[in-house]
Image (cartoon, rainbow, N blue to C red; front, side, top):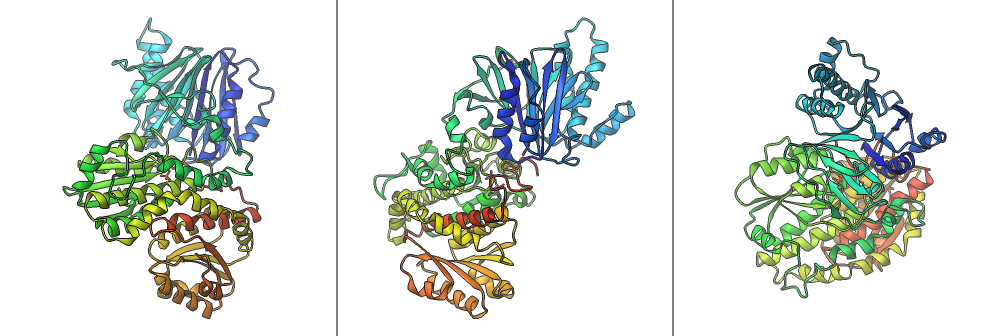
Length: 619
Ligand code: AGP
């Protein structure tokens, strides 16, 4: 969602700020703006719409200024227009903000009573006005204090009044050469460059400049100048910087027409990276994890597993339920985080909570993790962004190694999540002494080892999948159906389709068709059926017959050489036969490309579908 960039140093600030905003576009936004510290005042520009509009409007700006803050806004309070775009000015200060101020209405009423006038509908302006109001109050009582001390005290005071998870970054007209900010639950990453300090809400805006970064701790106020970033807390904790292996080239399109297409094609590579160093020598040996001992203790004592996530990540969790139940005979319950956090989940001794998140910042998933942590049960995370809040707050981590995922519609992160979950479930089965005699266990070990190769083979048919996708643009609705491990893949296919094309698409368990959705079927309806040669094959074939009998248009994604499924379908996609654990990972690839092809034919914005955000940091 919203994105923040700030720079103070020796270089021209504006190009760094605008470059950062472009790199944060993928998070989802509807307006953008910046403020430069210029000749003792602020030069502020804001624009509703794409960052490029802001760039075009700024050609004459920022030639000499070396200090500024910038923002992309995803509207929560107030329409996505120029007035509500950040930065917001309040007297001496100018401020950008991520997150939500839950009690903004009460604070606004209090400030209005004191005569403060507001020019926007945002909670952000309320925060800016509150700091400015407290700054003036404190200044009256603090004769002799420096402008910086007064501002810091005002920020501290405002922090005690404001409720919510947020990050703010601001400049003061009275304090040239410095940028201030607060991390209070929404991430801020900083880096000390040779030429100054860079601050952002997201690694993507930093890695092109430096790969040593620090994720600011929660509850801290910082100050940045050309020498770097410091915390202002009484404890004066030093910042610990770490090297990130995300490089600038990883956040470029690398010749692909979109980030999403690049990410689809990266899947063989990132799945290989996710498995590198983890696969055991043989089925009797352990997978290799970063925290081996703790991992073994946890899984030997587990009695119930909750897997919690949102959106695409929740589909990975659903597929994993099949793995954990079958291989490890473990009670595995799946929930979407926005429900879990408000239910009354039963946490008993032996309960383990695993949260799955590409971004590691999803507000609902984070809240579910915190609920579990507060209940004192063991927690782990499967995250793709190193050092994200969810990764840091979970008991331990099984990181995916998909690298930066910029396309809003998740692809490579999903296949990496499935890969880790398949490996983890196999290993938990071993730890619980339950592997023996299960044919699917042996096959899935082999399936994992050859997965990158199989994914390459599937991707070699990408043109065919995309062309087939184009033909779907006039259908009334697209249904996705599958049984067993293919059911969550059907849900994921439908989600990809609606995210990218904005057309109606629904996913179902194939067995549920006759309990209602079959009423949809007519020749203007396409049913995409996942029918690999697995144990549910004959049942799924019966469903194909039922759809065919009612004139539905059928696309089947099955196993190479399956003449029976081909005969029953209007179009057939044959995939290599993989294992029970890895077939779902192969089967999602054609669905990603079908959605892609259709969205392209409809002229959709593929990397940034309307209304969506990459990192959903509000409820
Ligand atoms: C995926 O295509 C979606 N953009 C969305 O459903 C996403 O998976 C969901 O918001 C969860 O995000 P997370 O994995 O970063 O927590």
